[in-house]
Length: 595
Image 1 (cartoon, one colour):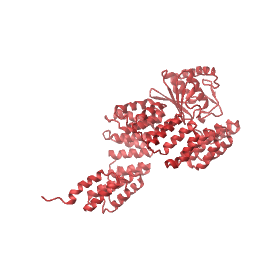
Image 2 (cartoon, rainbow, N blue to C red):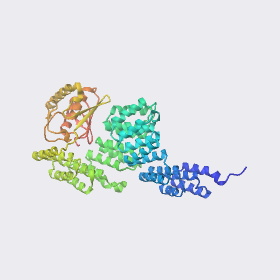
Image 3 (tube, helix red, strand yellow):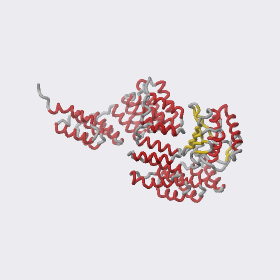
Image 4 (cartoon, rainbow, N blue to C red):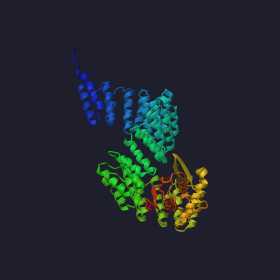
């Protein structure tokens, strides 16, 4: 029997090494052995070498190898495209598609799926449509792999209707966990939480027995977080536990976020505590949650624990710590962190960090320092608008019309999204008694058709959200009169305790809810969070914490009302407003009136 040649005997072993190689040094060493054996240029060797270099992210080596090939076929072109896409170099991946066609090699369905994924990374629906059209012409549009890539691409490009059209066009038997997960993610990433929840319900009934994986479960939990659907979020948590995925970190992070955004910080903490070795993302999630609830010192303790365990923070983690300092009055600690970010953690402050620090100084009344920091930041674009709006709000709160005027001038330099700044400027004038100037600002807004989104609040009852707007209680349905009667009764009891405002049917407010704060003017009706609370007191069982979500900052009058009502009815309330959470219990709030 003939003894096998060195190359024949060695090739399978070396290819096996390439398949298992996970670092560039191992791939390069195996490449050298193949070259020494004289078999580096065989079809099998070249294919596995190219894939290995791409897998390690060594794209320059991969490109050198590819360029040395005489006539690379579609497999080689697609492998290199995938490598560029996986390395975040999506435009280079798409340029390869054009170069491949110019060389006379026709793409296959895997090639076009890779191109669609590259378009997804770029969030470019225009290029994605071109790729989509190519598959329609080639007759591959029904391919499950490609259709799933299109769903992902359209979702990331913000074209959710197109993503759903592709998903609906797939045969039911072709939809797998990846395609369902892509559609769920498309809804969640585009803040369409209710649609994601509905799709998850469809999966349970029409999914042909498909069990949701951790990515699908995390998507729907994130959807529940976005629309504050606590009841459904708890059900999904229960399903994750039944499927044995309760300890999966991807799901745990989503649960920490969901419970915190639904007013259940204690549950967030319990989920976090069950993670054996928390990585960066779980730590960041729980720090941000603690910040939103005003647990500043606890957030700092978590941050110290994270660093002591060798977990390196990122810019989001540090932003969460700054928020914690801002909402807890830990100004000097926050400033120290801002100044040491670069030296300690190698992270340069970004516009969001400066905006948070300006907000922190403004809340504390250190307005001159806030103004100096705002000037130092040299922020541009939408970030600058947020920064100067934050400073303007602080100036109004502390009745510093001089600085408010300067901040207002900065806000007016922007041509869009100036409604918040104009309302704040009007309120700043009103806070110091300059009603004529306040009215002039509002008249200008009406004249130019500038209007803020109206304030609204919602409450969940038996998995159904009830949304209330200021003075509009129709959402209460047949119980409308009961809600108003209850508010009248509460108002009487509150007056006995010194309350000066009005809650019931004849209330005339001294603040526009669409201001997001106390302003001057007249509005007949009740603020939306009061209506939601009244409805909750009627329909939710006694002893159950009432959780109200609001899209704007809670006004001082309603904040005081919630404190008093918590004593009168002996119940706890949790309110999530634009900036943070308020936990009312026996006449006090977790924010300590600092928000």
